[in-house]
Length: 415
Image (cartoon, rainbow, N blue to C red):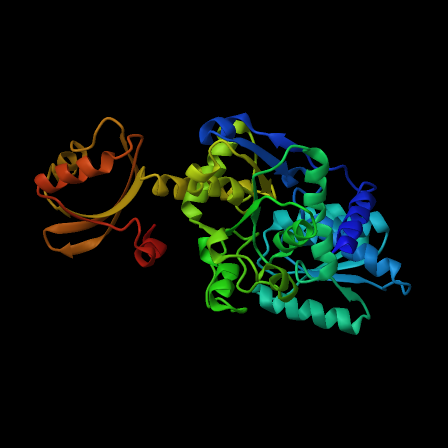
């Protein structure tokens, strides 16, 4: 294991030709909020705004040092891995072909192209990532190229471990808790392998989105499993199956130490960091900070490092993030209201709203009976707990309604 520490140290030193160490910053706001000493390892401030550049750089370095220079490097990615590969290709002056799904947002395609410049070719293939992955691997084989996986690779794992190596150089004080996000497992397995080779290590907690808990499922199963469905909202960490090489390291982790974060609550944390601290994090990048809410009692008075893994946030998603945050905090509801078709009925309903209530959506759906109409109505409030009293007033006034806020099927079609 000492060899692994030396290899990571060498990889970290080599990275300095590409970018400086990302900052480790004490965050006073979070420290006060949780009565702890909380540091953020700002991987969102790397050249490509995520830690993925580390594994990409190290894997590419190893391939180039092997003797036979590859004709081309190939990857399949719609996000941070693609950008890390593009940046490293430009640094080394080698050709790279990045396969992305046809549905990839233009912003991500443009950023990848900008990072790689003339050294990168982008190919859009497949409606879904699995199709894109097959196309990339087939091309790499036919072109006698090197396929660079985003996480399931020993060289990628070694590169991601440089995050922890930097933290040890940046903070001489003992750390009580380290919190890492988990997607495919590159960062978490690299970090656990690194600490496993050290004399001492902090308490480690790993965090997954609730809609993609592939590591937690594997640990409870006692072996790798493929999730039947995945919520892709946290696109940087929602993975159906943890990597083979990654699970080999992570399989000794207690399932109790792998936390699940609700996607809507995560949105509230994203907005909180943006509005209070001016820190822009993508959903996966905010996982570790959000997890602090589930650790309040055990971290009080402790020193904690949260790895903020990425900041590639597409601001076109901001309305959706706000919507999810409001729903989680109980400040926005969607109702189907059965409204009598008589003069003054709407006015009677509106008079039931309080001074802090606002109509955010109003749409007639269809008449459910000759004398009644169905209305989709969205209500926002700034008063926490205000809906309980509002619903009571609506009931007493004789209006019939249904709260569909948490009805995923109806909300998908109507909201």
